[in-house]
Amino acid sequence: MSLKRARSWPGQPPPKRGRPAKPRPAAPKAPEVTGGLRRAPPPLRPYQREGVDFLAAHGWRVLLADGPGCGKTGQVLTALRENVAKLCPALAIVPASVLRNWRREAAMWASGARVCTLDALDSPRDRRAHLTITTWDVAAARADELAAAGFKYLMADEAHYARNRDTQRAQGLAAIVENVPHRVLMTGTPIVNGREDLEALFGYYADDPPILRRLLENVAPDIPPKRRVYVNVELPQAIRAEYDRVMGEFGDWLKDYLPNVIEAGDDAEDAAARALNNEALTKLTYLRRVLGRGKAPAAAAWVAARVAEGESVVVFAHFSDVLDILGGMLAKLEIPFVRVDGGVSTEARSAAVDAFQAGGVPVFLGSSAAREGITLTRARHLLRLERDYVPAYEEQAEDRIRRIGQRRPTLITYMHAEDTLDQRITEIVDEKRALTHAAIGCAPVPATWAPDVDRAWRLSRVLAAGVPAVADSPRGAAELPALPPVAAVHAVILQVSLWAPDAAQRELRARGYRQRTVTASGGRVKITCRAEASFLEGSLRPVQVAPGITAIVGRPAANGAERMRALRKIRTLRLT
Image (cartoon, rainbow, N blue to C red):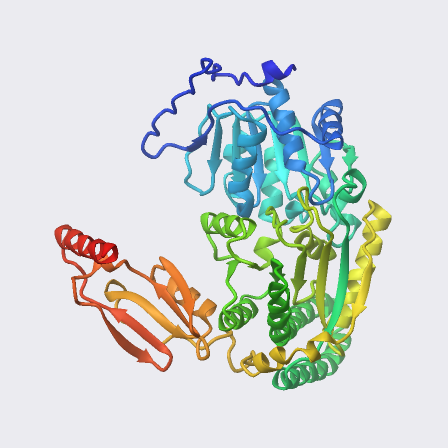
């Protein structure tokens, strides 16, 4: 199909020359639909053009396994734009965390298409849409509806989500693909644990599909290389004691339990083994949390050193309490940061990424929820606290900073605690990387060991005194005391030496307190919850709630007229 015809979406005639099309007003409770002026899409790189042609040559029934950062989304959406009659209507199933990004990509690569997003179980579906975008969980819950919708083209992003055929996501995908003639499963990590993952993805096709696998190193040699550095860190004394105690209990438990498994006989062996695995997973998770907390002081010192050099940095930690502790330390050092974890809305996620990429803040903190679908190329430094058993997950996080658009070599730093679980995880990761390389290929990455640099950082030793043990503070920070009613609180002021601001913010959100702005100064953080205009003039006053916590409270304005008078008064004072 020619480019001219490709831009003529069915049901949407081209706008008149020189006059932009007027958007139609949205009807109440209508599906979320985008679409509008057709713009020329960005140019494809040569290997992306080859990928689009490869999809067409194989009837758009391909496992697209290009490595992270290769621009898979642009390829599948270009295929849609160039083959409207054959591929529309189309369905994209994507992780919830990248739903908004897919809308942006669709506006870029398929401008003019009518796009509908289903982000909830009750989201209405626009049957006129050329492209419907939904999440894995919504697709699983509405599989019967989507299977009967008559889609011609399916794009399944991060398809390894459906590698386990016993899950609802996998079963939903299986039901949908039965009625879709053209399907492209997309994943930069087709092998997560072993080759059986790849075989499971092949099962979504009637026969073995062709697999297209290119690595960023091979197709975009202009993108600078990455290197891994392993840094030995010294755990705070109290954290090391907790780790050793739990590790001792774990070993004793294994010695007591294994004889029972052996004596139970074959009939009970499977059940006992499952129980053993569950118990082991719980204890291993506990140990990883302990290690994450113990590395937080060195991580904060590392971040401070990089920021002092004028660098932007990305830090990944798996556990929310580890992020709470690290965020509290950065607040004490008055280092601004944004944070993206599983509790952040899609809007806040986009705002955090945009603020970091624009240079508004120098530090990006992310959990596992941030390792997919975002670009953080402003940074060339990335730090990971806890190790992951799955190398693909580590690499997904690494490649947030090494994507198309990165112009500097990237340095990935892993903090390693000697004589701990870190050593065994490193061995497992190396073994799995070797399996992946043998099956589908993966790029070798130079790795070096750095000296025990954190011991030279006095700052890390100072910060270490504020790390609570998991047993003493499972949530990572003491719970906030009772506060005045939500309607009466203008702001909350925290002394960062006593309260972790990041954890306090999460607690405030959970209790229903809005957070309009957050400012730091002089060892204190002010969290503004309600505007001054929401209170009667002269009623605001500070109330000490607990040591290190002050609430600014007032009498809420009773009606709109009072709020407007208060607002005019505030504006007058600011002008004068």
